Image (cartoon, rainbow, N blue to C red; front, side, top):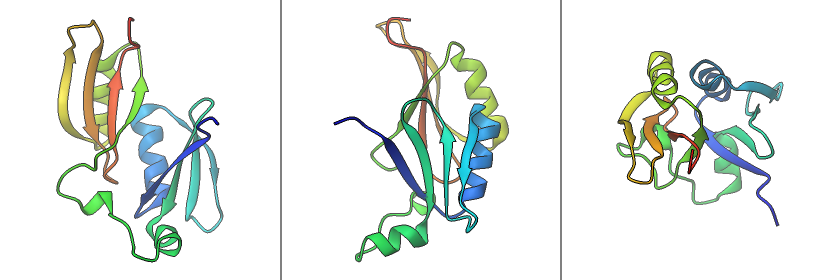
Length: 130
């Protein structure tokens, strides 16, 4: 098996796509005409967003809405960049909330954390060993 896609359930799919375009420089691959599902160009694995209503259809017991959770959920996506400080500043300027500023880890990797308006936790980092 291989990881094909990640779907994040959000309150406003077009807004999440637009945020990622502005904050991270990603390009939109697809937005369904209903506005309830969209994808970003991210390489081999697709980052997708779906409306909370679709999640509610899939899970009879409902699901946790990351955008209304006081704390970030127990998962993140990681975006690799050569300039974490610049990427971090760009994300904050686009409306992300700082969770941890850029720091260099003992193994040499630079890492920061931001939380998107839709609740998604994002690690911005240099490549391991880079």
